[in-house]
Image 1 (cartoon, helix red, strand yellow):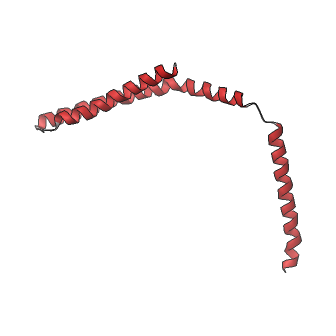
Image 2 (spheres, rainbow, N blue to C red; image 1 turned 90 degrees about the vertical axis):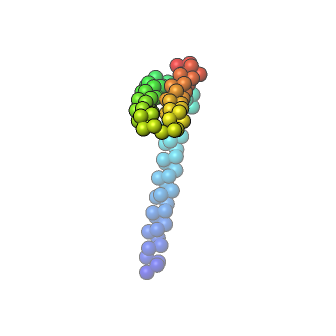
Image 3 (cartoon, one colour; image 1 turned 180 degrees about the vertical axis):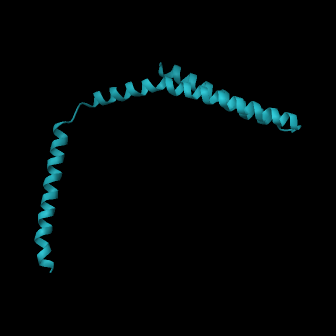
Length: 109
């Protein structure tokens, strides 16, 4: 029984190699310059950059509001670590805003 399938396996193997060679030659014949791809990626990243920085500003604002509520609750509760919690929440808010601004100015967008 093994001899019956062996010639068919060779045909399938030869067909797979032929398809692979054809595919590789097709891909290489239509290869483009790498600069065009890099410029396209640069353009797309810069087009989303303003949206990303606005998103970071919005997240910073939401963190500031949540932090204000948490600090207010701790302050009214008489907790001793209110200053630490305030520094943590508002520090994260300020960090997001500063990072968005610095990235925007660093990349010149």
